[in-house]
Length: 306
Ligand SMILES: NC(=O)c1ccc[n+]([C@@H]2O[C@H](COP(=O)([O-])OP(=O)(O)OC[C@H]3O[C@@H](n4cnc5c(N)ncnc54)[C@H](OP(=O)(O)O)[C@@H]3O)[C@@H](O)[C@H]2O)c1
Image 1 (cartoon, rainbow, N blue to C red):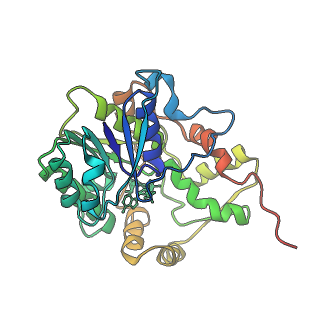
Image 2 (cartoon, rainbow, N blue to C red):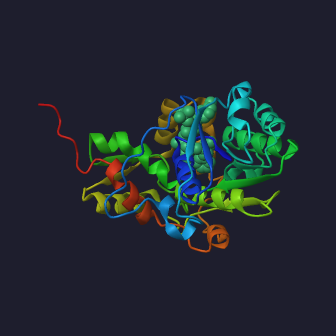
């Protein structure tokens, strides 16, 4: 049995699908104990997780959905019962407590999601700090582990949604930060491969990127073409960007994002060979991500109320 945390999230949804499509028994953990139906992919594109090349079996295993809260390790004993492999998100209140529950339950392998900034070890950055804290907890837990450190997700494009619903302009705080953004479906495919691999890759740290480095303006141009909308990027200056970050997230995370992408402490522009090395195929392109997710974006500016 595999336990997938964050099963309603960008990676977790894909991982649940990938494991189930490969015939593996899956338990999806959510705080509400429910797994909402996924939006239908755009007609031109099958769900990436159902790619037959990554299935080892054509019969889907039954899916269990369980309730649990990663901020409350005491809620995890039931969900962890009988689990062999666990996919774990980082940054919760008591990561050693979560991992102690996994060890008590006899889990044989934890795949921890982290982030590429963990490599710097800069604990003055609040995001890096919670990634490093989580990696240290998994390394100390006495359960075999593998860490996956992804670059920024293609699904961060969905953060433009409120602006795309209001009009054709997108105000972007990091216009000069290129990134080899990765499809969460590829992160899930890597996690599925590592979880189910014989011998399990214990102790490995995999940093994973997408196949091309793109500036926000290049991503917006591809989105505009896909939606058939005349979208325009409005590049925020550094002061405007900092004010926008402060307005939209807690201060320590606003400072962390500014440190990464305005001060340039994090370079996610290199294209890495890891996904292809692990999966035997290149990572999915941004255009492929857009094909799968186009239906989640408004095709045109919504009419203003008269
Ligand atoms: N976005 C990026 O570019 C990026 C890059 C590197 C690493 N990461 C890391 O990737 C992870 C996912 O990021 P995302 O932005 O794509 O978010 P997401 O996967 O869309 O959503 C987060 C998931 O976490 C679950 N969750 C939240 N609080 C929980 C709790 N207390 N107990 C159990 N589950 C909880 C949510 O489930 P419910 O609300 O349904 O319970 C949801 O499924 C984050 O840990 C982030 O640090 C993100």
